Length: 365
Image 1 (cartoon, rainbow, N blue to C red):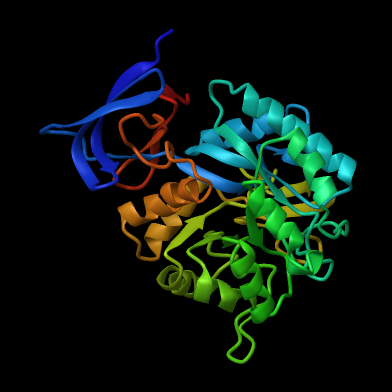
Image 2: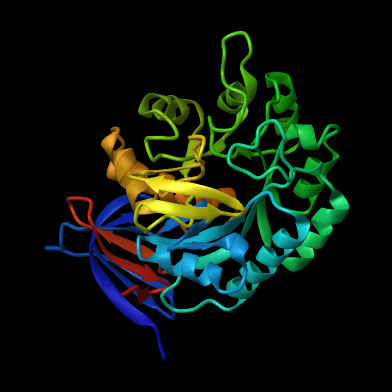
């Protein structure tokens, strides 16, 4: 069956909004035409989420069909592509999750967001900065990383400098074409800056689970603000204060939103599991029993709305929920609406409600 269609509205192109219609065929954009009388609704690139653990009650770490449930849950809320994100756990559990994510990546199904690969968040993190991760952190191992790469297309790896004292592991990741990013670490400014020089190009959930910015001890946050062009950030307005978000946007050109979503996303308040950890969802937060934030129940459309609510334009909020993330992992055909690019789109009404989602030109019903 030929996948073709057209959609009219205020279409966000790399050059700005065009009042017109977008036409696609075989899942790819053919052209964008200007037209009079186009609807006021915004046609934006589909959201791209590089840090997503779960949703709809399913966890990437569960293996099996869990990744498909996660993909369908987030597609319904505007995410058209994402990285299935693992967490710190015993190695066999990680391998199970990687194999399952790779099966879904290789066999995408209608109604699901596209799995672009894996974000490996742990086990190569600091035991002193686990956040909500289980106590299974280990030092960086090139041999183990080779095994992981044989199992799945790993695009991003979160690394603590405590797990990579000489920088050899980060250099290996860079040479293997994997994006290394700092996170779950208590590194000081100088150590973090050296890791950035070695090839770390982003940080994992900026401000969270890392050494903070103090005026005489700038920490990882200070190194990120001073040296990075990219950083992921959770804009649920709970993990990071709006003022800190705006400060980051002024300092780091390509800050991109992530959800850090857990199985509780899209589900009612109550008890859930995140990996091996029991967590509790209440309103817009997910926490461990001791109150520690444990990922989120955020969706990308909510992240988009939150960015607009703190003063970003529709265009900038869209780029920070789609384009910059795609750019960071080298996905040039996603995160933007251009001829030859993926027909991944969201239709947002003027009141910022989500009207339609298209993945490869196919509507998500």
